[in-house]
Length: 448
Image 1 (cartoon, rainbow, N blue to C red):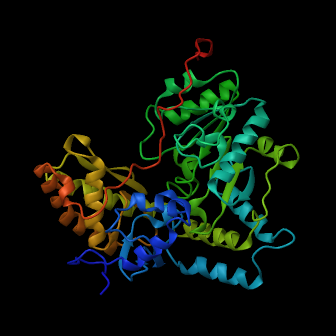
Image 2: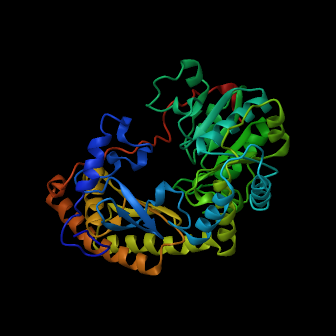
Image 3: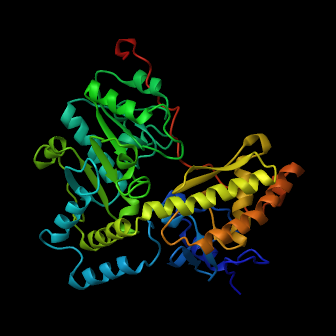
């Protein structure tokens, strides 16, 4: 009998998941299209591998086990699975068609809607994935400034200009790698030291989990303006979540260009580039950025319905309220158990559970918690990616499970042998290097 969302006696049976996994081996490189969804981030032998359906914030794997989901498609499910108003909009558009031989009115309607929300959206362009629009923004910055060097902070996709600064850089020409450098979040000196006369753009995720300190984002805006550098906000996570208008609205800052995906279409594939008209006007003739599926109508219909719902229901406020309950609840439980080595941090709409290496191997601790959360019907990967479908009941049950699981972690730490508590394979390190690599040497002539 399949597990439910409850205090189950046994770990979920995942034989059907494992059969699909065996079929994928040798056929699909890395067996996944999205690294964060792959088996390396879920303890092999315990965690489900393939999901079949979802409703609200609950999902069912191919073996029929049910879970409360806190990954939510790695971000896109801002409202929830099978959200009625969005699905209805998709179905209605499907009756008329998906992709057409000429432009579709939704391209105009959705662009107008986004312009009314996003602070810097003087112009709007659509594409399909986040890295499509971050790459377009980088190309625009180079075209507008006539410069070449890019400074980045965060994760910006798989395209050459960015991935060349990571440790998965095979196949990227050295000449391309030499044009992108990183800086450290909340470290203004690392930005100043990296700037040279050929710097075209500063691109960053406005926040990941750490809050900006000492007006860091505002100072980046000032530096960019003073130096004639294009400031790009990669708002894949903050857009339509931290505020309806994203980080620009929340922090009161206008970036020159900004990019969005994930939350704005509740799971449908679409991305958006917004920005200053004088920069975006280069897309008229000088900069080429066109795709066959950029105006695909199902995703545009989903975007219109999702954004409308986000506005009408004030979804960012809901995500903040529900996420706060989880984050603070987790920390209260850990504190009551005298477990200072684990805590929930980050913003309420997307918090992260961390483990201090002073108490043991952080990956082993995370694996143990994931293992026990999954046993009790919670799909957990160390984050609380909140959606509009996470109810009070879901939050309360999750905190009950934390009350059950954290004492197990405490016992494992006190025993000094966490690995003996593990039923499956230890999680692999997360691919997300966001600082202290490929830093550009300081050039004294560019001191500010």
